[in-house]
Length: 59
Image 1 (cartoon, rainbow, N blue to C red):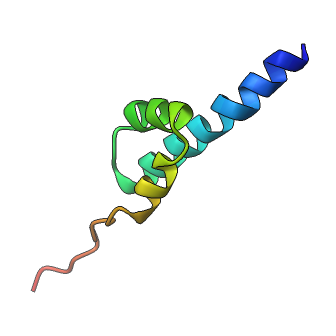
Image 2 (image 1 turned 60 degrees about the horizontal axis):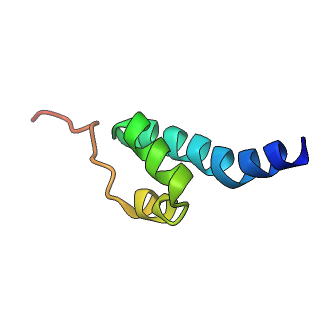
Image 3 (image 1 turned 180 degrees about the vertical axis):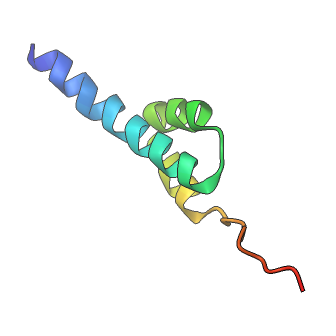
C-alpha cells in the first residue's frame, strides 16, 4: 500500500497540476498532464509560457 501512495505522490500530483495549469493557459490538458507526470520539470516550462491576452477591446 505504501508503494501505491509513493507512486501517486511521485507521478499523480505533478500530473494533476499540469492539467490544471494547461487548462488555464489554453493548452492541451491531456498532453501536458502526461508530460508533467513523467517529467515534473515541464511544470516550470508550462508556468513560464506566455498566456495570450483574450480580453482585447476592438476599437
